[in-house]
Length: 21
Image (cartoon, rainbow, N blue to C red; front, top):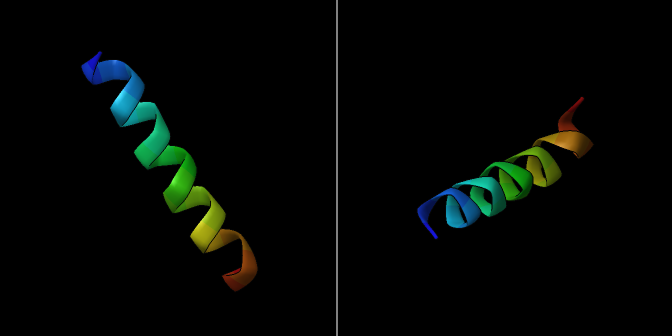
């Protein structure tokens, strides 16, 4: 369960950082 939450958080960070690149 924790891994799922961690993966979602990483995806969210990547989504937020994408426009900055």
